Length: 320
Ligand code: DGY
Image (cartoon, rainbow, N blue to C red; front, top):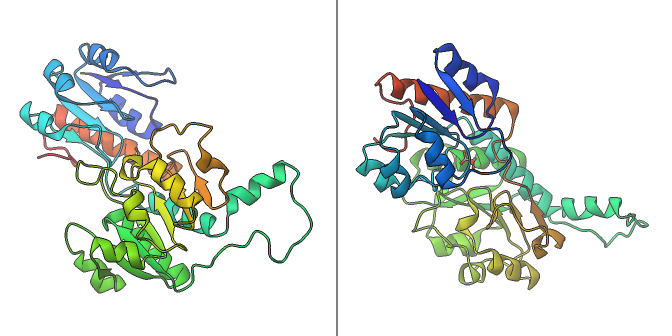
């Protein structure tokens, strides 16, 4: 069978597909494919391993009905119209679980970096602004015994909660669609209303899927309900927050600061005012970017494709 991969992926997954005797085409240009280019490439292939935010919507599915297997190289699937996939009876694979630790590390890194203004202070060195020692300058805040609020307490949120308890004895509160009984029992996490989450969190970290219900939930209105000392962290999807509102909230001191691994839009514009703010740390969507995790993701995506091509159920799929 012929498999189209939209970007270069780690050797581990690639090898699995090759070992199974399939013919692989990897798109190697360093730019996203247009939807038309994607559909055209798919017309010459039997399976698609989709990397990046390729739009898999009604147009795509209606014109790529011949595909026997589709897997994403991500856990997030906000680029997929699941109803359209179901309508065309296309199962879509994804890569949950293996990236939880790495993504939680990124949230942890941002939380700590923002609390100590790390990126801003580090950038000063390169500008020759490492001046004389001032006991009242460059001060951050400590995380010990503070309250970590988690919006969407699934696998990644659980990992972050464990790290934050271990490192800083943080008190965990969360808001979810459902109660997370394991988190309540094992981590002492407390379920709270969305309003309480906003009001009580010293650090509020977002780990929910982007969906019509969660789009833009962090906006001027919600930031205004948070503590002025609060840190907002988003490693999920940029669409969950309103970036203009976030910029204003940090600038006006409505909240203390923000750490983002995801922005809206992506890539973030280099002239974003957020990039110059002392209490803001931004990373370019590297949540799962470790060698171990990307290897594991490529392996799961490859196994999803192999299973579907063999007429079997994929190990991980977003729809039944
Ligand atoms: C994911 O897996 O969803 C990561 O954000 C990479 O896109």
